[in-house]
Structures are given as C-alpha cells and as structure tokens.
Length: 532
Image (cartoon, rainbow, N blue to C red; front, side, top):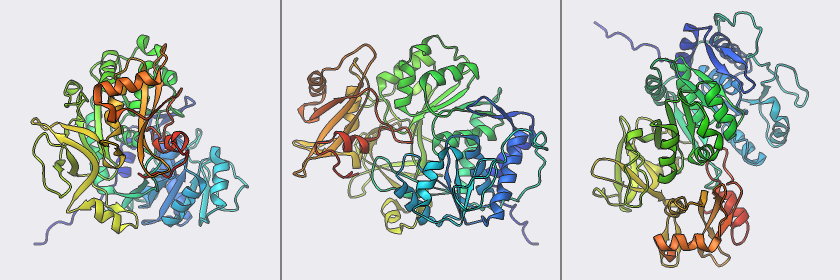
C-alpha cells in the first residue's frame, strides 16, 4: 500500500491570508494617516496585486524589486510577489542610485515597484538600469516612465473588501524558494545579498505568532523600516490576528503618543532609538499600561540605559541577538537583564529553541566556558547562501555552521556575552581595541546620552579609535574629560584619539549608528575607504 502524499506546501503568505479571511471586519492595519484597513480589504489587495504582477510576467523564481517607503502597500507588494513564488528585494532608500541599480541588475529584476512619493529616486534609478516592467503603487497613471503602470489595490471603497472573497492566484512558493534577498550594507562596505528561504521563515513566524497570540490580540507599532525587523514582527502580528499600526518614521514624541492612543502591546526598536524614547520627557507621564513587550537588538545595548528602561517601562524588555545570515540566535528575557559579563555589559541571553552555539579559536577549536572567541552558530533560520557568491558563502557557512564574525563567550549558565565584531576591531599602539567596549564605558558617563566608537585609518596606514557622542539633556561634554573617563576605566590604549560632540548620531536605514558615514566625515583624512 503506497504512502499518503505529503500535503501541498503552505507559505507564510497563505497563512496570513487565511488569518485575514477568518476575521474580515477586524482592523488589520492603521496607516500613518490614521485610516483603519479591515482585514478583508488587505486580503483582497494582496490577491489583486498578485494578479497584476502575474499579468506582467512575474512567476515562481522571478525577482521583484521594491523602491517603497513604510506604507501599507509595502506589505501588500511583498505578500503578492511571495504568493506567486517570486523573491523580493527591498532597495535601501538611503543607498546611492548606482548601488540600487547594481542590485536591481544583479538579481535579474522582472518588475520594479515604485512608491509614488519616491518619483525622483525612481527616475535616478531607471536612468541607470533597464527593467522589463515598472509599476507604481499609485492609483493614478504616471507619465515619468513609458513602462507598465499598476494601480494600488489598497484603497477604500472597493467592492468585496468586507468579505475578502476575491479570487486570486494560488500560492506557488515552495519551502526551498527564496522569499527575499536581503542586501546588507551601510556600515561595512559593498552590500552582500543574503538568500532567505520560505521554509525557515514560515516556521519562525508561526513560532513568534504563538508568543504574540494570547488575548487580547497584539497591536504592534511599526515605527522603523518595514524592510527590516519591523516587517518580520508585522508579519507575525497579522498571523496572530493582531493589528499593525504604521508610522512614517521614528519620532520619539510621535511614538509615545501612538503607544498611549493606540494601546500598543508590542514594539521593536534598535538601542539608539530606545535611548531617544527614554530621554523624551513625555515618556514619564504616558499611559503605557497596554505595553507587553519591547523587543530590542541589532547593536550592543548599554546596561545603564536598559536598567533605566526597565524602571520606566516595567518588565517588558526582550533583547534579541542575531544576524540576517543566521536569524535570531539568543534572547534575554525581562527577568534576566541583571545578568552581566566581566565588563558589566548585559548578556544577550541564551540560545533560542533549535539553536546551537560554539565559541571557537582562530584554528576552529571549540573553547571552554568563559573564554572569548569567535561565535559560531547552527540555527533553524540559516541563510541559503549569498546571492551568486559561492566563494563568500563557503567562507561563512560550513557544515551547517555560520561564522558570525562576532567575538564573545558563554558562561556556566549558558548565557552568551558579546565583546564586539571581529571586523570592527581597531589595531592601535599597544594592542587590539573593540569599539563596543569603549561605547559601553562612554554610555556609563552621566553626560553621554548616545555614542558610537569607530576605527579610522591615517594616511600612513595606521589606525586610530575615534568616538562620536551626543550629550545628555542639560549637560555639556568636555572632550578631554571624556577621554580621561575612558582611560581611567580601560587604560590609555582605549582612549579615543578624537571625541566629536554631535547633536544626533547618524543612523543607517536599519537604525544602526552609521559608522561608515562617521568615518567619511570625521576621520583624519575625511573619506578614507571603509575597511569593514
């Protein structure tokens, strides 16, 4: 007797569509302008957009590139492309047109979707590269490019939006197909395309949605780029039957107001943005009683600032450590924020379910507990590899293990403690300095609100450490006292050669301190090439 065939693969988009269809009247999205989008309307918009893409030749294995801001259509476009089995590439809005064009060309873009608010950027990009189909998310035709134009399916007043019963294309994606290629860049040089498969991503969302699902349904405030972690949390929120509240960007007062007005339960922030939130006077009097989880990660966090966050926000902090190549690696829970390493920095937590961690020396030998070395991981979310870079893939991904490029150690209780990235190491007279160690000390200074330490290269090829600092409210910073503060705690080798006082740190599109820009604008030779 033959075995029963395996059930057809169900992609994450199909699961989200099922959740939307079950409660069509439920508010799935709230736009930055305050419009409530019912689940049925969002469901129909995805199907109509998928049909429009299919009419322009998009199918399983195609690539759809997105030049889109943080608007509902960004989610609709991604879901529509992924439903057809096409991969998506989100183009960094802060990237130069030449970089965008190189990416569009390298992935063999079948269709480019352009935000109508990014007309100028679209023109600059299309002056450098040809694409078979160019579609706009606007509802009105444009004349700025003689290519195909598609109207936005996401707008009020359409028939059928209350029920979400519009017939549309069937899901074509398979578990091994790429759902996206995420290009890294902005801080460490030429972007690399990281291929992420449907199977692992779908399992991640199911797991995360289960965490968010307890009553009442989650309400997630998306105030950072949907092309990054905010988009992942948005997917899990919709899968859990919740509501995604969109903002057009991060503004601390706007975020505090939205947290209170919209009864937000979940928030994702990178540490620099969390610090801005903590420093705003409106936070102290805001009603944040609905807040259940504040996820943070992406860059090292200050122990002092996190302790302050716990005082103001309560036991809602969840720290994530991970990489695009490996997915989430560890998590530190609210009650674990008192666990610190030898340098006083809060742990990044213990391995998440299904994750294995090894600390290895330069020869690949596994190091014992407490010894610093490079962090290697094996996770359920491993990338498929770098896009068309088998050489680079082989350097990073071996026998199912990712070399993270991060330095750290495991303690006796399984908590992982980070030191810094290998590539951020600065070679100075006397030894090697990791910028994160200096940042940790600087953030303990009462007059420092934010900081970023970075290495620069002099004309003679030698390296030096510099630091950019943002003063805390009501404080002035004396550069020599700051250097002395670091020297007293770490030694003269760690004292920044220069301290730059800024009103605000420049951030990448992903919300991380833009060290590449700092090197270019503040370095000794103003524009030495990025060595990362």
